[in-house]
Length: 137
Image 1 (cartoon, rainbow, N blue to C red):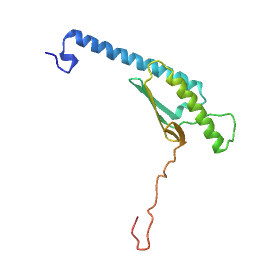
Image 2: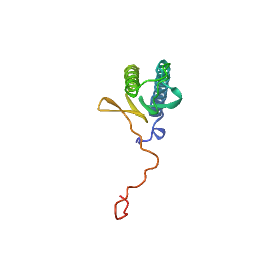
Image 3: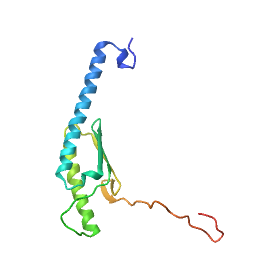
Image 4: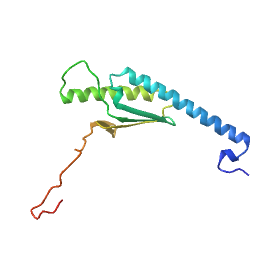
């Protein structure tokens, strides 16, 4: 009789389970290495980006900023550069063998429905709006 726990199963089942785990860890390590390489090829500020790879799924967080030689760009032009950099990066990352999916959860730019958009951050302290009868809304 075998149980759901591979450690309690026969040695052959345990061996296949451990080989699968080692293979998955190796695969994630290789994907992680390729993600680092692709990020280094961009002009992104790597100090502000966090990422992880779990079972072929890449998770990004932090803030995606571009280091540029140009001193001043208007907001729309800078956003266009951010988007074009992210689109190219995403294409290159999806072509890496072993990548299953990619999630972008940056503080300043997000993706939903296939479109990139600015993420508006709420201010740290918002005073309550008061009515005439002094009840907080």
